[in-house]
Image 1 (tube, rainbow, N blue to C red):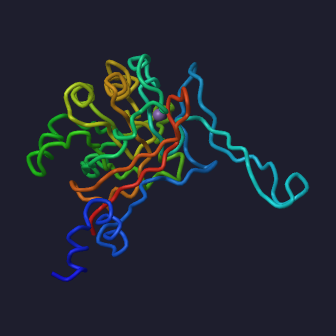
Image 2 (cartoon, rainbow, N blue to C red):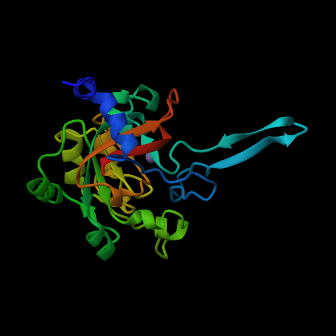
Image 3 (cartoon, helix red, strand yellow):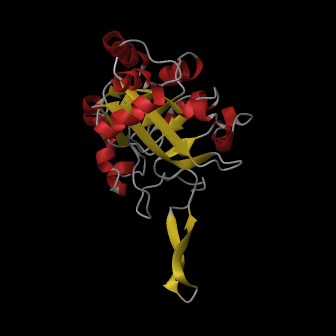
Length: 268
Ligand code: MN
């Protein structure tokens, strides 16, 4: 056996992954929506208090305050743009983990994609139910242990337009897809998932304040040490099954969430 063949045979795991990335056999897909002052933020109705939008504050720009450098202060809420919801974000998870305490191993795992674009196009208040997941499983196999369910609604096409992204009616009520109460409870209490990822501003439907309990995805996922990731894009580049997800929030001590960079690895 030639030495090169021996080396090839020994090339396993990480070396194999890096080689596949170098040759393009495996591709890195960025699922993150760029973060700027224009990023649409969740708008809660009165009497609730809202987070601030993201903004950059110039401190110096190669000028007197810093002649050789440019740097900014960033001003942002935790739950802005593509971000992670940690358990302590919700009352049901108040004794759980903050965003810095989430085990990174839970943030890297297999991702599956549920495509409900047609349903969401027909009804902006569309709710994923257990039977949609069961139908997906009958075609693609069981949901992966420690995995992430990514819900493709087509909402990412609205992400740069606050009005259509939040999709409020004349009364100011938002309409965007989410989960049924039963489905949220099943994901939280019974599914093998680490969490769910969505293209919308939050993991619950726009009208989820009217569900019982209100905001069931937050209620049941965060209350069961499962996590949410929002404002994803580029799910079109992922297969229904077979991608690997990397969710990378900032480890903000005491934080209830954090803007995150989210990547997928996919075989080309
Ligand atoms: Mn959030």
